[in-house]
Image (cartoon, one colour):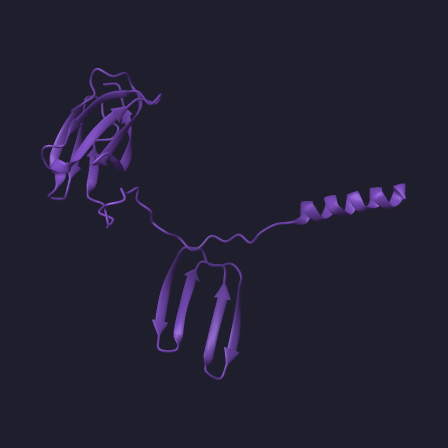
Length: 161
């Protein structure tokens, strides 16, 4: 009985060590669709299998799905990637550029790494300057919000002159 228990433990340990998943580095890919269906392809696969039939052939392999997610408030219906900060890192002044017309509804707040609010104001123009000269060189976070809901958070590097 003791030998069977020890053997069972070694087998379970052996199976748990041997478990692995597929891994692939893909250089590119594409999605295609037509009246007969759709196909997703990846370039740069190291393993693939080809299936041939009378209606055509398909080469299958490792594919990764991806999704771009922006942090948006609940009332913002579209992804608008027109918020930019520059220069980053900066020694003295950080510029926030807003590329949409309702910028007056937005506000910025600058936080230190502990979460303390250092400064914050309403955005009153398509380009806003934020002076960071008085803060020590460190990592800061610039939060952009609309009606109290976070739209985007930037990581800001404050450098020494």
